[in-house]
Length: 297
Ligand code: PXG
Picture 1 (tube, rainbow, N blue to C red):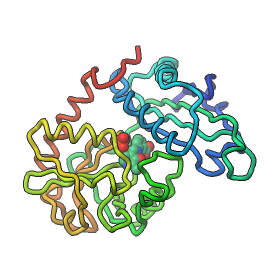
Picture 2: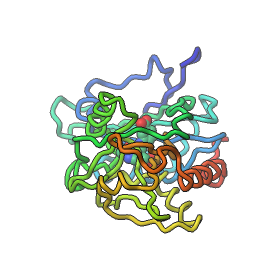
Picture 3: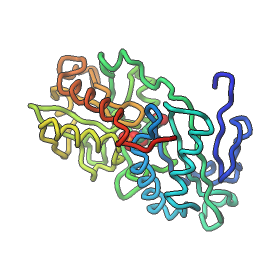
Picture 4: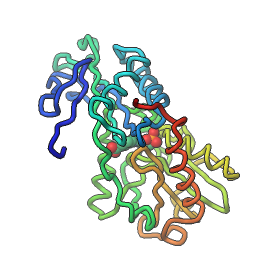
């Protein structure tokens, strides 16, 4: 942080960054036992806040984590954290951990979940030059956990599956990694969903791939259909990805990011394609519309 410390919400209290601490006995820390959301606000409006809060509770329900506040209280706490930090364009991390327990993994030993809200000025997550040039990708050896394992449909604190793929991308000098599902079809990137464009149609993996049902991806499907494109959800092979006319990633941080190459195979023209550009432009307009979020003030 530059100069001023941000204020962080922990279980109903606000702490300056340097004093915002949780217990080493918290099972979020010991076992990755918890759920989270990554949210952002655009110009004083929290983009798709309701959808993020709904997904947080959906994830919590799946892991039998009781969040000790209602959705309404959670929404208020997020907005209050933004106001306290006087943030208009922010990145918000909402974390609910299993809370303090003993050193065993049994969650019954954790009487109360902890709620943490961190809001910081929006950092530059991707350089804007990449927005034109596109990202270089590798396909990772690490498979997405299947839907009958620690599936990423649940946005849990367990991100090692993605982190291993990210390390591999870093080692290969690539921008990002594509992770395949347990059947070898394209699933998603480490923290973004994936779309390809082929013969004017827009294709994305089905929910059965075990990817996170991205909120950005949901908006992109809606925008693509409004623009008149057919959106198909089906298994995408790596060969199909190599042969795509265009490909792009979507996510809260990435927004819409074109892909220029995968495993050194150029995708389409090797830069942002016309369909991706159209969708990116519509998406940026969409984020500016206050009715697509909740105002902070
Ligand atoms: N897949 C995974 C595995 C994710 O974690 C997405 C897809 C995109 O979902 P949304 O709802 O954001 O469109 C995510 C989201 C970060 C960061 O700091 C990661 C995400 C979101 C925000 C920030 O790396 N992941």
